[in-house]
Length: 292
Ligand code: NAP
Image (cartoon, rainbow, N blue to C red):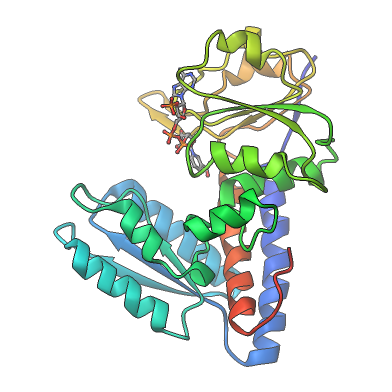
């Protein structure tokens, strides 16, 4: 079997067009654009690139983007004071704090300080709680992108056994929470694996859909995949030989029915969903009901 490609790049471009239409409607109604404020502390080169890409994508969709750049020696109080100011600013709809923060800053405290209605990454405990209860305000960008990739390629989720490898707050845990909810894009039977999972291969071979987010290049090999499974690779591992996912793409694509490439799979969807959440945040500030 040679797996069909789950083309995240193409879907992201379609999603960005849909968002741009929503932005145009918002501008038509309120004569101002949704606005995302990004906070970048320090000079980590990868973070610089991520923030620049997010800003460009905002601009292309008609979303205003503002960058607040702070030096690496910024104190916790200074950062919290900027967040408080952005929370108050009614012209800012979404706040994005680029992670990781430099050593010495308390990431959790900073993320908790972002107003839940402006929390476009969906990291605030109130938003995470809402996802757990099946009444989300915002969905976290990477898992939301993956869910859309499955849905819009007509891949059945209900009743399927999904195995998620990785239990991070950003990908693994919210992904599992979303897929286990009742209704469209959910109703899966979900198993979450991590570094303490015993006999990982025996578990992954049970998966109808295998979602991998661990951060180890080519970790998932063909013998870990059930023939015909759908494989979603979240990993982005920069090595001397280039950029690789967490899945050994060539051999696994001989076993799987569908597979995401790296790059061009999950990555582009993450930014597309950030734009979507920013428009949603702007609508919420205007008193609109969440579009769900
Ligand atoms: P993370 O916070 O680094 O967590 C890694 C998870 O993998 C942990 O739960 C860890 O288990 C588990 N793990 C590590 N080694 C394992 C092993 N040998 N067997 C089973 N589980 C193992 O991960 P993350 O932030 O979710 O990122 C994961 C990858 O996705 C990274 O490559 C990252 O760059 C990429 N990523 C991509 C996007 C995108 O937009 N494409 C977005 C976010 C992340 P423990 O909990 O037991 O330590």
